[in-house]
Image (cartoon, rainbow, N blue to C red; front, side):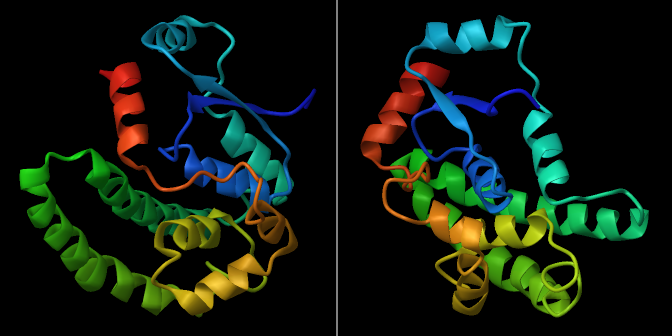
Length: 189
């Protein structure tokens, strides 16, 4: 691959944060180009040079993942999609109208405690997360649930490439605040 991968996104956490984590865990250095206006977004959408699958390929190469065992990869994808579903609920929470936040928070807590956490507890000792196989699931899971799963956080945080990503001054983004929500509204709505 020639040069560093370039992430195009607005200057906030958003959906690119799991990609940032995966690239950091794989030890891949990357550049970011931030969207500042709605015109920047239109130029990106109409551009012919974008490749939306590039981060996935870069991570697969860096982790030396081969599709030898389709069943294993299906299971990993299934759990990773569950993490993505839970993270989307958390990601959209700051952007909700104040009247809907209490109900949304109750839904997030209920789904996390009754659906997602039991499934991850069941699989946590298997090779899908740690051990012989290093894949995207533990990184995505840790990124989505880092405040709640202290033991997993410690194990993932001790990976050398993740440890570097967690240092001050890295490309990691903080959770969305009111200023970030307003910036996103200007660009995406």
